[in-house]
Picture 1: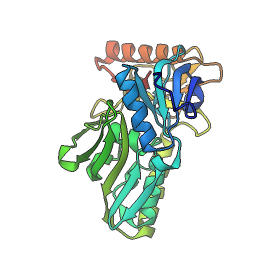
Picture 2 (picture 1 turned 135 degrees about the vertical axis):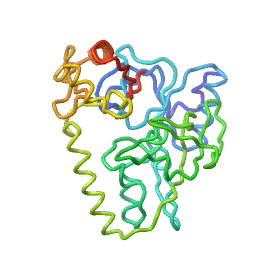
Picture 3 (picture 1 turned 90 degrees about the horizontal axis):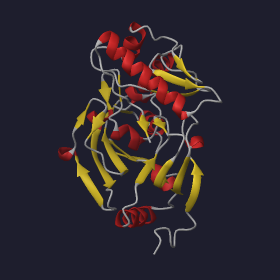
Picture 4 (picture 1 turned 90 degrees about the vertical axis):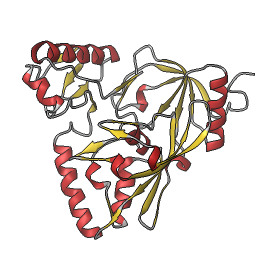
Length: 292
């Protein structure tokens, strides 16, 4: 039995992935699915596991580069509302892994709960933020994470308690295929004061990022003690480009693509930046962007 039997209504072949990424680049997915509920999602993953078919989860696409030749196997996109619900009970916010991080933050602030607002301005989903332990201004999402329910690569649903979770700089032990839901223990605070603080942080964070209408993505992790953007500029790479991909003039750690750019252009620029920084400064930069 083909893995998509019975799921023809949610599985498509040859779906172009570029429109799903912020860089607007990349080839096709061999198979592409948008499950309508958790049971469909779990069954799809189990079938792929049985058939040894690669499975990838596509979030908001803010830190993703898809190669020009596309990807084999199944790409899953959690587009329906069930995967993006956000709710609050007492001082705990529960968010679906597919929820926008910005939605979770604004909900917490509106409810007078502090802890997530330092992350304002970081793009992507709650699931993506947890996978990479999103951080800003010395705060990371792991600090207030109480637990999570995940789906493994074999299609098993598992609950992870706080004691089982490990968070480090830009990484976490939540490396399963899908983060279905997560709980955040927050602190009560005056909503008006929280709103003011969030607005100030948003302005600061956005000032250091490319403009919203640009096709862009952050490239490297900060290697500790100094920003990747500073290292790139110290290496004399400000304004560097490859083909139709170039560094942002607002932040050297962001690549901006023009309409005729290819993924190969971005990959060439990434290699150029990494090699030159290592050669001139002796620092090896690690990519923050996921490359499929």
